[in-house]
Amino acid sequence: AGGNGKGDGFNQLNGPTYLFVDRQQAVYVADYSNHRVMKWVEGAKEGIVVAGGQGEGNALTQLSRPNGIFVDTLGTLYVADSSNHRVMRWTQGDKKQGTVIVGGNGQGAGANQFKGPVGLSFDRHGNLYVVGWGNARVQRFSIE
Image (cartoon, rainbow, N blue to C red; front, side, top):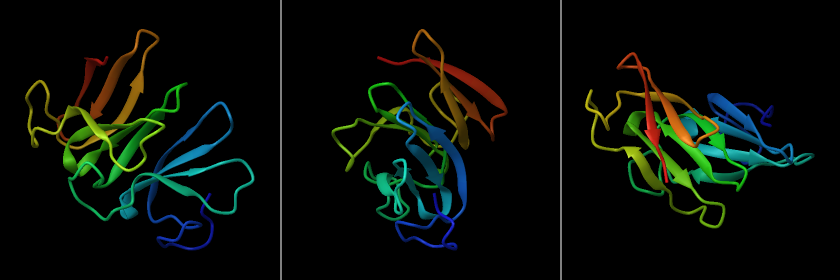
């Protein structure tokens, strides 16, 4: 993935931060400075944009400095959208627009607020754990 200089082409990255490898050996990369998440299938010369990639912003089609990513067994992508202080979900059938599942209520220290979420993971019960860098905490959420 990447390796063709810094840039915003489909074979380039600009500030990659986190990665995830799924069961089919596809590599997902949080492309921080391009405000997108890219996916490379095994053997591909170029990646495809699976989240964001519409410029930096806070619309449901945009990301702002993505960090932690996770892909579940159904192919659903979860993204710690750091500068928007939220976690987004993209279902496999809808790559154009995501859904805010936690946060998105402005920067803060409230129960459903973040100050720069950077990492995320799930436990075997489906609970979502989010690392809030600016709040120096880890929060647990029950996600449907």
